[in-house]
Image (cartoon, rainbow, N blue to C red):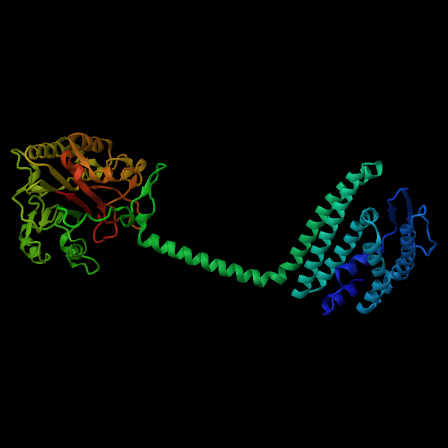
Length: 548
């Protein structure tokens, strides 16, 4: 029979599902018919025998006619299937011969049943008929499984899949009719059929699963090329997306939240999305920027990006610099390199150690006055060039480079006991006449949100408990406002990344640069922002737009 099926499936004229249905069903060892009328009588008929004696069903005319057809069908079925020896005859049949035999044996019976039987008689017949169908479907499954093992064409796979799908659908319809019949007639036989139908449900599920597994196994090789093509297409799209994301992360690492212990609502600072729109035209304001350049002369020589290009891009009014590392003798030469329009520059250089520290203020606005250092009597802080103060009409601007506590925290006591206190007193003196803007590298990550790895830097310069406490007590508690943190309370934004471990690529940084303003003008701050995309130093520039 496998040969017949294989031949039929390979040929252009396939064996239909109804023909397969007929072969399997007529091969059953016994079929129980029930004609439901006024008087109900059942009879058994062995289709595999040679007997053709008609049966009577209590004067039921349609039942008698059905018995004649059944007898004729039995004779033809015996000729077609009969015993095991007759299986060889089926295997030797061509498709045409198989079709002719099926039409002769089964087609008249189908036409009669669907055309002349009343619904209850037909329903009863299909109920008992379907009981034999499940076992025959197993034979069909095995035949098709073996057919798949021998086949390699996509056409066979599609045809077999369709055949199995139709077979499963027919089984489900038959089971539904069984359940309907049993529920409608609640007798003992009906109850027995309910149990049988329940068992068949379980068998059908297992059979269906096994069919799908068989198809999956045999179809793997056939569909592998298409599946591989689809997977390759999807993979390429995913890779392209990953490349875009990876490229974006590599070029803009600050857009990804980087923190060892982030809190739930924290997010990464992105100047492209977090800056407010520009002020309306005509609004009086000042734009101030500050940058620890870590060596100004080296920065001016950079071809990729220089301080001059920063002026062109940002169009600031005032630029404050820290760690310029220039000497007094170099100031005039550096001034010549400044952009046109910034005619007012003021430089404070270290005299205690050459090429060290240094601060500056470069402005297009002419200040009312300039101070170098704190000017307080008895102060030793002014010899390192760490403070420049300019007075404008409405405020004082201080550019400062706060001393680092150093390796081993050698200067920690000097920092918190002398420097911070002296600077705090200086600011309070200035505030007596005008509000103050304090900016620069303050060398302190005030809160845990301001440093990538707070737990690992408890005793590192810039994040010790002593420095953070001093920062709060001498500046914030004295009325100065951290403008960036006020504008972005839950945002992680860094301004410094050490060269030593290449932490800028992974955004593992510190926020050491600030704009602190007097409380009286804090409400006038339009934007306090960071420009992490600007390279050239281990710090990046930060900016402040202040309405006047």
